[in-house]
Length: 614
Image 1: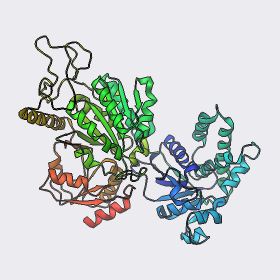
Image 2: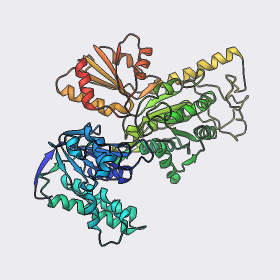
Image 3: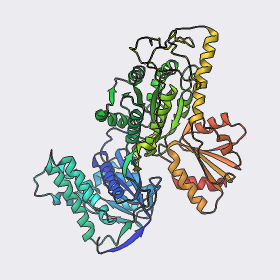
Image 4: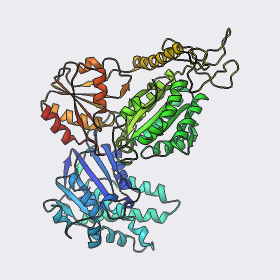
């Protein structure tokens, strides 16, 4: 604690921004994890530049990390920030629009030079006046100079010293919000102390220097305190969506008693799933970094045939490349999970920006009558649950499953209550171990759910054919018989349709006869939920229905949609879910609210739209 007046706040949004090499992601992560350890609810939004290495000091190269922490459950990273930390004029210019009224702006004074100002594209040499920041609390410490001074006696080269300036900014924020420096220092020791203890010491000194600067200057009239959130009892950790997805697959493999195999090709923003699974050799996970997207899914199909729980991961354009092989998995009726971490498109589009525009591709993007199950996760932490459920559905129903996440929840993080695996259901694949005592093994004989048996290769009496050509409805041998093809098309469709028998009905948040029903799916849940909750608190007649199981649709959907005067479908595309719902529920009128900017919704724009509809 410090001697200044300490004000209690319900929640705070901080946005760290600078060049790609300024360490803003690490700075934001350390502040977020520190807040999580103090018991705050948190939600984060890393905002990466789309260019691999844009010129330093330009707006195109600005990297950002936004953290929203509070004394209650936090469901989104916030619209606008209370504090903007900008390491240069370009970062200030790129993020000016995200400032709340009366926000605090901290910018490195050493970066306000004619060269940096011109690189950032200002019309004048006075960025503060040009951006209209005169009425904001603008603090301009010479961060780079003071960082150098803090380690002047260490004998480090200038490049190494300057790289520590992000920790100086972190120290200022620790002071402002009464955060302990201990976690960040322990992290630095763990990361650098053994290989290069001087780097660890330099960064720790920078944190102290920033903290002491804030404590000893008169520019901070107050410090602030955000009390811990009242969360459900349990053991928590901060987790992002990609890591949660990987862990959900590990859990499903354990429950199924099968080895986990991931065959993938690195692609932004899905690569971290492959990287995380590659670390889990201790759990028997096998990973292959293939030479391309097609090879990635084909190795996974081969692994599924051999008796593995097989997954492959990708993003937008990679899903297009995998489509033919998905048809092979459908025809072979093999269990496979395909993760699509959606990003802005088409083509390579906006690799680091979020979008929900792959829904139609997931539903229909294959040749022939080729149904696959489609589900979507809606927050960083529930990526674990839906990865697990994708595995359960794929393995028990012998079908490919597409799991949709998106760049927003894949990179974002929040507290995750680590579940007890005793609370998760068993996974029972239809494995055939023994040849029939009488007659020939029929690999495509189906049970009451239309699911065929799964016979692994190499077992006597269970030999069978598999491939992409149509097959006999029992034997699996190649068949071009018209009636047999019709039967197989209907059988594969019926098998996927019966997945609906195992799906929970979505929960309606609000009155069944509300004037306005807001429908969303996937990663928009946090923003939609906050907007609806705010309007309900104002006495508005509004309800929220969020979809995670998309194809087949869960039972009871029609009843949930009925009874509302108006229905609006909100999604980060130009209306794909709205079109899908119109196909399935023609008696209802679905209005749309869409956004395709590579950014998530803001709560403010959602509330404005909902009020206009009400």
